[in-house]
Length: 333
Image (cartoon, rainbow, N blue to C red; front, side, top):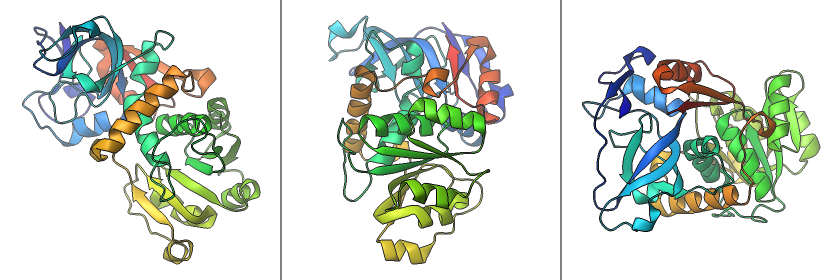
């Protein structure tokens, strides 16, 4: 089978396509014939900064069909369409290969109506978004229709992959969704995702615009740039609100401490890999339910343009993500 590997850290040029035998699943594992592999910022950052094994296959997310199961796994799962999460987390085998072996729970049933493109776009973005939406002290800790009724969610960067997932999941759960973007093009994508209100922070005063639609403040901020947006978040946050930070720029954020204290607010870090196990189980189950309900979509019409690359162009796919491609980069296996 074909697999992409790297044996040293560096740029996209360290990625190489090789031929090697397909692995057999061990007890509790399944083997998935990968149809589509998703590329996330975490994939290129890991490739550049760390190498935990002599040889690493990149990419955490993907979708495909189970073609073998190990001892202790229901043989009825063979032939099941699935989406994959965290395939390469503390393991040498990511989804940038024709088949991947991983724990059975990390291959989640994908409904027939959901495309492999959608399945490969879930994983890191959707599970991150779920955690951001469920860390408020007042809850909820699960997402379902009605779970966020009466809440206002602000999604910073609504045209990104996590932002897109956060908008769709928040809408599904009943929230009013406000998002910030940096261009008219991204505003159209955020609206397509389902945002109720879109604020272009380059052309209008963001805090004033957000407060005009949420005079009582926002309950949850899904934050991609806390160093840049710390002051804004403090200005628009509601009493007891939470800023869920899942990424950051090179600089360290400066928190508006007077607002933190006055609001009894929380700035919460979110790293999908180290989310508590029960919360991760909830996230996987809730995202699967949203997919089953048709509440999560991909493509330009859903605010997330897709960019496809063949496996042989994996370096170009990684470079596209590293250069901040707008939308979701997918590798067709």
